[in-house]
Image 1: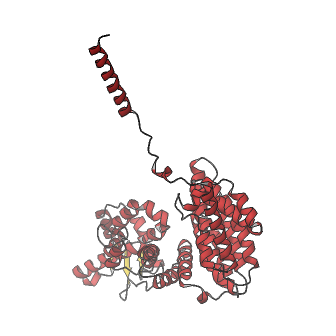
Image 2 (image 1 turned 45 degrees about the vertical axis):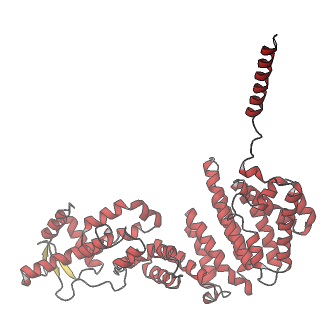
Image 3 (image 1 turned 135 degrees about the vertical axis):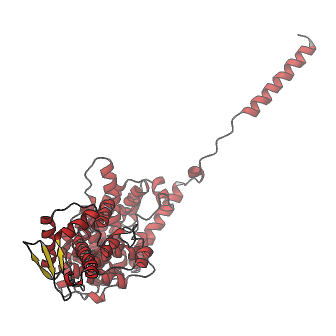
Length: 447
């Protein structure tokens, strides 16, 4: 090999070496979630710190601090504590060894937090129910109500975790039974609060959590026993409860009265909820109005358009795009039926469909009243005599086909319901109206 060739070969070899060194892959950068390595010692410290704070809150009777520590469902997936629980899997032994007298409470509480961070919600609920049962046992033994705020958080958490667990179970084809179990547990909590003494002030909050469960499960009949306990027991003075709990209670009991078609009582309860609700909470005001407005309509009280627009109740409102109230003002049965068809799912879901459907009688009354006004302008002497054929023609103009016999039945119903004063001449097929106040106002009375 000549000296020139040797120099070229060595030069190329050195370039290849440099190229290899240049192209050598660097050590990959760890992903963001792995960038901060958590040592076993740090994980041990974090878990120990959390346990100390829980125990200190109990020993110092700090209900607010304890309430924040037992909140599970509101925590994000990754927190300093959840990361520590994932790194240090022997946390149950740590809690049991350090605080054996509270192990029944602390161990399942940690397990629930860990499972929730992993989005294993059924496991999180099962563990939290065990922790809640242990906490309830301790709560019964405490003479003062210092832990009432924490007990309320436990009641809220068990409902929220049960809802998440049931969604998870339903998606995997399993029986979603956790919300029902949560209701059974909350009845035990209610029993612990429904006693003489200062703890009874927390009973209404738990009652409202039970209402939310029963309404979600469609077992609203179970509300009755709790309502009787609140409204008939001598232990309770309704005015002593916190305002926010009274508002929630009146909202749900008002909805129950809507289902039972006790519209006057529903009006009273929902109006109370509206008047005492926080005026800054527009979402809650809208929830109340979704039921109160149909109730008011059923007793003849029409809402203002500004109210409906402000709280986005356009499906009920007062122009062609908000058709229910407009149909009442015009006596337009077609518009009412179109509104019920268009928003059927929404009205059925909220439970006001049947209430709105019964507005048909008021719409018929307005239609007859308009016919009466037109006849009075044309033939004042016969304005009180309305032929059924005229009503049939008016309905046909609204694209509603009815024969005279069907219209006769409707007119008879209007007279029976005191929406029209008069009598019916069957042979001549004429509705004879009273000359004094033929269309009485409801004045707050249900049809």
